[in-house]
Amino acid sequence: MRKNYVSLDAFAGIRLAFPNAEYDAEAERPALYIGADELIALLTFLRDDSNLQLTRMENVTAVDWKDRFEMVYHLFSYTHMHWLTVKVTLDHDAPVIPSATAVFPGVEFEEREVYDLMGIAFTGHPDLRRVFHVDSFVGHPLRKDFVAPPPPNIPCIRREGI
Image 1 (cartoon, rainbow, N blue to C red):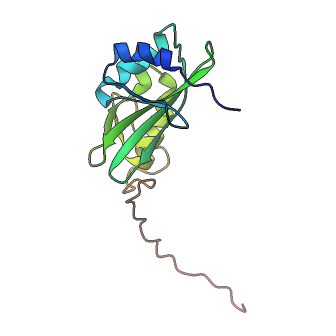
Image 2: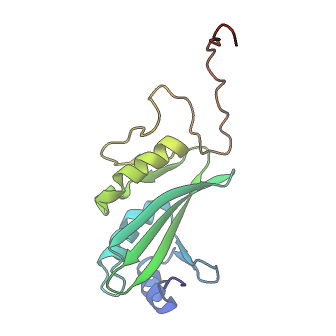
Image 3: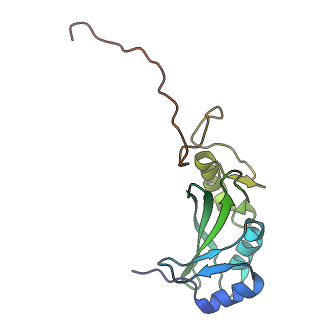
C-alpha cells in the first residue's frame, strides 16, 4: 500500500508561509526541505494549519552523508490521512539544530538518541544527554567517520585439561 503524501496543493499553502521551503515531489518519497532556522516555525505551522493537521510526529532520525548531516522528521495527519517528510541539511563539522520538543514533546528521547549516536546537538532540548553510552564514551557510533576503540585487554581464562 502506497502512503498518501501531502498534495502539491497543500504544499502551495506551505510555500506561501515559507518561501524558502523546497518540496521534492518527484522523489519516491516526497520531502520538504527547510533551513534549521525555520524548523520550529514550520513544524508549528504543519501541526496547526487546518489543511494539514500533521499532529503526529512518527519518527525523528538523521543521516550521515559524509559531507553533511540530514535531520529527517516524519509527520502524519489522522484527520487527512496523509504524510509529510521534513528534512533539514546540517553542516558536518558543527551539526546543531533547534529541538522540536516545544512543538512535539514526544521527540525528546529520539533527539537524545540522535545526539548520542550521531553527535547532532539540539538547542533548547530539556535533557540532552547520552542514552546508550556512558558520558566518557568518545565518539558517535553511527557516524561514517567513527573509529571503534580497541577492545579492552582482558586476560584469557582457561580451564585446566582443555
